[in-house]
Image (cartoon, rainbow, N blue to C red; front, side, top):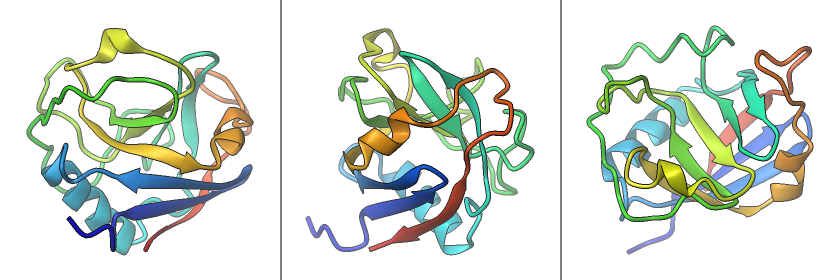
Length: 151
């Protein structure tokens, strides 16, 4: 499978974060994220929920965790990839088929999420910048994605 177009770079207020997207695990989710990146949806979006030792969540256009894109929610693509440090996975409500634009990056192992959330990528560079993202629920003066690009 070609790697072209499956590298997502998030330029954040803490520095770049490079994510290898995994269409082999979650083809629908990766396609959706690529569409949103192409529309510059993630540019300027804050990390609104950041829990030390757990994860940093982003992707809400309202900055509150209550919003998504204008597109329909996605059908779950749960897979066997473990939720470990650097994994990128989709946020959702109680409904398994409610993921849309919000996602999180794991700071450390969160194996209790395995097979219940859709893993779609892995940080391959810049995890030290993820570690610097300001914590909080909600975050005061949150860090944000300045721009998101594909290569």
